[in-house]
Amino acid sequence: MTPVREGLLAIYDDLAKDIAAASPVCELSGRCCRFLEYGHTLFLSRTEADLLVEPGLPENSTVDEKGCPFQINGLCTARERRPLGCRIFFCDPNYAGKGEALSEKYIARLKQLHEETGTPWEYRPLYLFLEETARSSNPPVR
Ligand code: SF4
Figure (cartoon, rainbow, N blue to C red):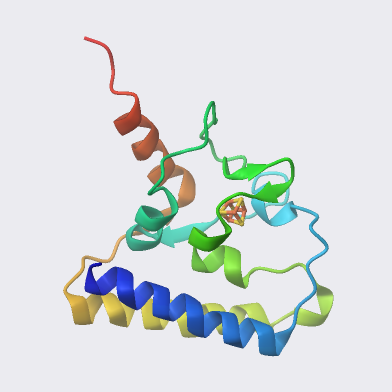
């Protein structure tokens, strides 16, 4: 395992403890994964994207700005590999404000990890990384 992957998994473990302490409620509405409908964009680093797409995209998935292809029948099928944004976002009103503070803390830590491991920092909307993955799994026919 590369040092940056190892560091990322440690960050996810630490975040899980902070989320458990904040104890937001998830009612499994699936809103967090339907980006266009609820007016948000999921940004992530290439390091997180590489982990997320490691097994490839779900079969027959559509890649666009509307949502995430890993959401199937309203549930995330990539829970163990999901990026920071997915782990931090909750629509529980009692959690308001806590997500922003956690985002700030963990994105700073992720950036620091990139610096320490000499990994280039690349931070983009999810669909751009997924488009790359879709292209590399279905190269154009010549
Ligand atoms: S990775 Fe999972 S939690 Fe994150 S947007 Fe996709 S389906 Fe939702």
